[in-house]
Length: 219
Ligand code: HEM
Image (cartoon, rainbow, N blue to C red; front, side):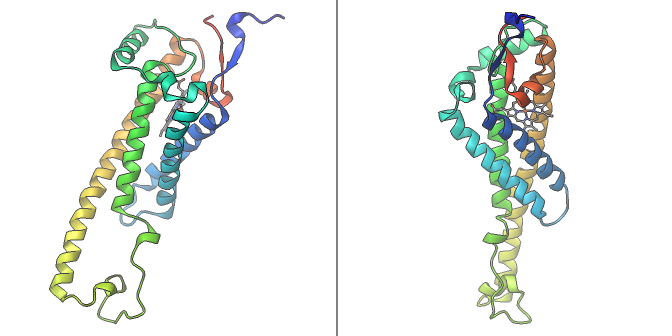
């Protein structure tokens, strides 16, 4: 059987893009699920956040120096093109792109920005074990070890300082939670967009993100 142009496959997504995508999916899912717990974040939440942040930083670098379809220059367009593509997609008829479509590209950028914002606010709200003040050997029974470094202060001063720190942590923690939820909304829109584009163009885009391949031309 001979291959026709419509079933000839072309390599689009390099292995780093594909592995990075599914690792980001896993890291975001774990961070989101474990972020629901009350009190201090679990180690799972912290590590999933670090990994998501690392993948985003790496993806930005790869967007500048990576393979053809991984580069921002290949898929970042103006809002006009993105909206025109989306309207066409909803209408069931629009141009097919081998790399990210203009709307897909806009979503990639939005997701990377939102995940970066979520990770940074998470780090500020809770810098992790390494950055926390270590218990001091000079701690006394009536001074909690966390506060031992500030033992020179009066009781009132220490109380005011704790209250101030608490307010700051609560506010930045709330911003962190809002960003995480907005990211989830984007993720849902992203999945719906992928499903719609897959239907309209008659190709399984999720599978392409696994194999890295797409068909060359429209069937
Ligand atoms: C089961 C759920 C998901 C599926 C099926 C899926 C599928 C896809 C597909 C098919 C693409 C390529 C779109 C195109 O052809 O233009 C893509 C790109 C992307 N997706 Fe997802 N996605 C999922 C979940 C997520 C989640 C949870 C995130 C982020 C937390 C995410 C972030 C991204 C990013 C950043 C890209 C750009 C990839 C790159 O260029 O490196 N995706 N996704």
